Image (cartoon, rainbow, N blue to C red; front, side):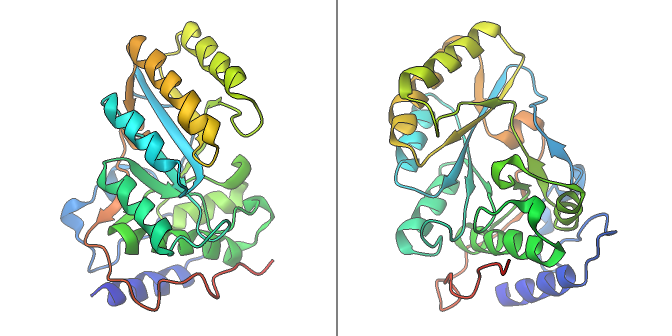
Length: 269
């Protein structure tokens, strides 16, 4: 059945054009678990809409520090959102990588797409965009059984073609309204940024972090969780802070087979 769903979705996406408003669910998808039609594919979101919520989001995994982030969030009664890459820094299908993806999903965190190779999406054509997006969606689907509703374009770069491709794929484009700058700053500087944020008392927060930096995952995030929780914010997934479904549909993970590979999936640019 899984192969049938993949073939159905692939055929439908190949036939899609830039004028497509939305992609239909594959006919064999478990529609009873889906809220696909309650949202607007192709929407670009930066801010949460549910008051008093914080979405801590993490790019560029799956990586070893995911476990530290997850444990800190769950200990505080919270959840996070992980935007996974496919083949940029180790294949997502490798046993250790796939285990991290499944772990995050099983713990109740939201898992989503950060595209395959972390390319600037604004520089890609229609076919290249679909290749970058589909390959990660397929991997997350195989590993977890869930088909993601959210994609975060690398560097936050997008254009009208990216929006149309996301719409055709049923994806919401997820940006942010607070950048921790954990990719460039030391732990003390990032902690100050979080302290200043909390002191400004925004209604809600959609924060960009990276799970691949040890100082961020092990030092900054526990601190941020603590001060955000003390300030009365609820730590939720991005989907929850927007009041939208995290997945187009959910089902049973696929069995590992020869298709669990990164070979031949690179986008030709």
